[in-house]
Amino acid sequence: MRKPMVVANWKMHGTLAEARVLAAQVRDGLRRTRGVEVVLCPPFTALAAVADALAGSAIGLGAQNCHWEASGAFTGEVSAAMLVELGCRLVVLGHSERRQHLGEADHQVNLKVRAALHHGLVPLLCVGESAHERSQGLTFTTVEGQLRAGLGGVSPDAIGRCIVAYEPIWAIGTGVNATPAQASEVHGYLRGLLSELASKEVAQTVRILYGGSVKPENAAELLREPEIDGALVGGASLQAATFVGIVKKAAVRGANPKE
Ligand code: PEP
Picture 1: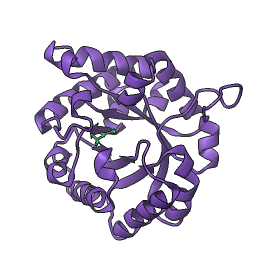
Picture 2 (picture 1 turned 30 degrees about the horizontal axis):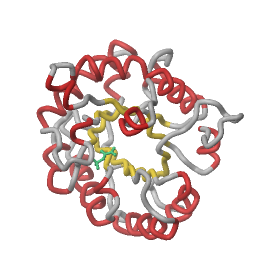
Picture 3 (picture 1 turned 180 degrees about the vertical axis):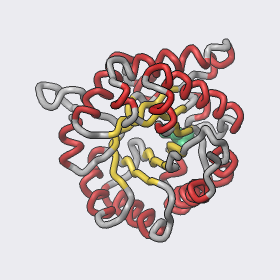
């Protein structure tokens, strides 16, 4: 059985003071919540402060990106090894905002996935199609290309240490989420590919999260789908009450597994 997971992607939001308050509010709001794994991914600048706020809680720390080299002449970059030193256990990789606005390519995402694994970080590999690709019937082709490239050269065992997020670009930050049926169809397809790339057994253990306008109002129906193992939450993770509301919906799913 896959334990549900909810990951907060704070993107480029929050002063240090705001990050401390938000992390403390989430920590306090989830004190008695069980059956779900929660990770907060603040901007790099707030990682240490959020680590302090989360100390002693079950909530994990994650980052939104990393470089593939451990150190070197890469101005402005942060390595996986540096994230581990700060207490991160997970790193979001291949987010569509980085692919779209910063020109991040599949081969770079792949290098990052491998670096993260090498340093003991869990890569959260994001895949997802644009509205145009969906309208052209290219959803499966797009996510398949991204998954195969992102996991290229990764051993079956190591694939078992990865998490995948299906994030249709048209749903990110738009308020329009994929329907449970749309998301479920793509998750099932991705799991089939994971079976091929690793094995059926490994694929059954890999969590596939859905991301794209998840809010407390739609979380329950999305998370009710057996193929949806949790959520990657952007906008709604910036308010403690809404994020905690989503996590509690996932905890209900964790307490009532469908499989
Ligand atoms: C995201 O940034 O990964 C995301 C899913 O954003 P939002 O929840 O705001 O759509």
